[in-house]
Length: 200
View 1 (cartoon, rainbow, N blue to C red):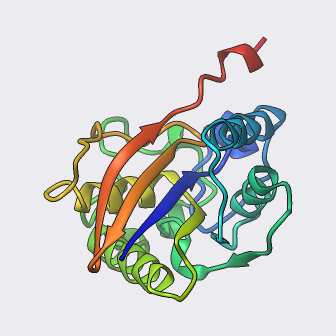
View 2 (tube, rainbow, N blue to C red; view 1 turned 135 degrees about the vertical axis):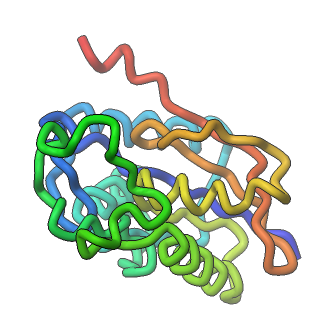
């Protein structure tokens, strides 16, 4: 049984533009962020991709991205397992307040601040996405999540994946296409929208 997961990062947000740390806290999509979601939608349309089911992090920025990509044509299930890293007491702070050169959401960096560890997030994402992909009738699934948790999850698939991904957070509304078979995820394609035409 081979199935396909389309794991999508949300569009640009107000906090992204202001350099504010957002994990479990939230901020709305910008006009550019909405445009990025439409570019991702166009990419799916051009390839004739349709979704059996759609899932999203409960964050407004992710849920709104999912609605734009699907045109609201199918219900989107809000799923806590797709949430971003918790950044603890750093949530809502400016990146400028963090000691330059030390900020890194991976490993155990965030744990002393009350945030998530990378292993914890990878396990949460993996168990959530595996449970989703094992459901009946889930042959083509959209899941909208966040930059850091997606990068952590994708990096955990590197050993078995067809495609190597750079060691960085993907652009807003990047699409990661994963083949799911026999309980394993294989990253087979990656798309980052060219939003230069939206930036004026």
